[in-house]
Image 1 (cartoon, rainbow, N blue to C red):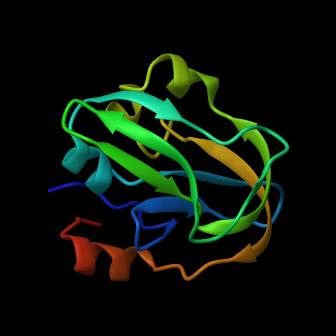
Image 2 (image 1 turned 60 degrees about the horizontal axis):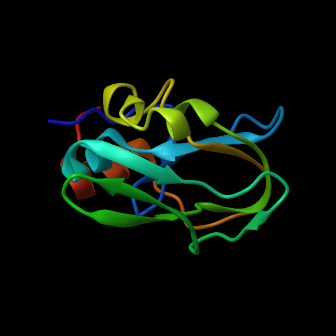
Length: 127
């Protein structure tokens, strides 16, 4: 069973967000999503300086099984993208909550977010 990190919040579309209030929030995809996708081979992320909108598509993730849209869990400006996952997307499978983060956003508004407990119960993850 895929791990769900207790300290994070989650979107219904399987993105996680780390909100600590001290700077830009970090966004990635959950281990549940990474496991379901299989081997991730390509990722398309929003550009630095662009605005993302909560609940709307902001990129895509391609695996050996399928192509999935990436949705932003918040509204705000993208301040950084993880070039490491662009050059080696497989890191999302091996470390989705660490080195596999996707991008950072200065948040102006949060979308509907789930606690780790709510996300795990809806998606079969393990805290």
